[in-house]
Amino acid sequence: MTAELKKLQEIVNQAKNIVFFGGAGVSTESGIPDFRSVDGLYSQSYKYPPETILSHEFFMDNTEEFYRFYRNKMLCPDARPNKAHIKLAELETAGKLKAVITQNIDGLHQMAGSKNVLELHGSVLRNYCMKCHQFYDVETIAEGEEVPKCSCGGTIKPDVVLYGEGLDSDVMNRSVAAITKADVLIIGGTSLAVYPAAGLINYYRGNHLVLINKSSTPMDAIANLAIDGKIGEVLGAIKL
Image (cartoon, rainbow, N blue to C red):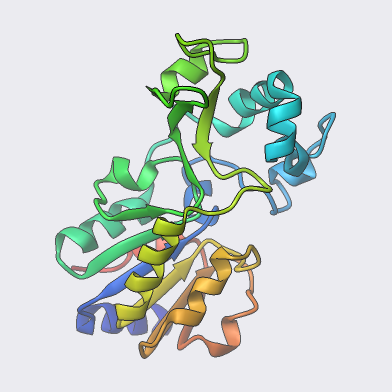
């Protein structure tokens, strides 16, 4: 065990209220591509940039084109939880982890067994009619080829936060409350460059800020422990 992993183990052993805040890097080890890495969606070629396609305005004006991209790139039905998801669920079961705050929309934390998951950007698993608000599961979206329509005739929209849309205020408030109470905040798989989510770190008042990333972040200098590595391998090494 390296000195960094030994230090992380010591922090976890002493912790009573851990909160985890994660981004796309948590799911890349499950085969889900991120947006901003060298191999991410932003480096690929499409008729429109992904950031444009995944915007509220584009969804409203070019719904058919939105769904072509969305079904092809945003739905990953074969993805399964990796070591990071599994270890976080185990930490919650052990009573140490109180909340998972995620920027991901894939539902893998819940699939691994985590209960208190705060999804800042929504989830592909939830979809609703914009007219009557009837709920639809992800299979309804994945199986079709046209713009999905409700039985009432309304357009079905994924319950995900698109560019140009605000974050859910209740989820943000609960995230702030969880971070404020935490004695350990572990942040992993995120560049901490996307606001307002990245600003959540400012609410932390504890003594152990841990960053786990394959690349540096703007917050490395203030972290008590910064580990350069794959988050699945790092968290997977923690013993309970």
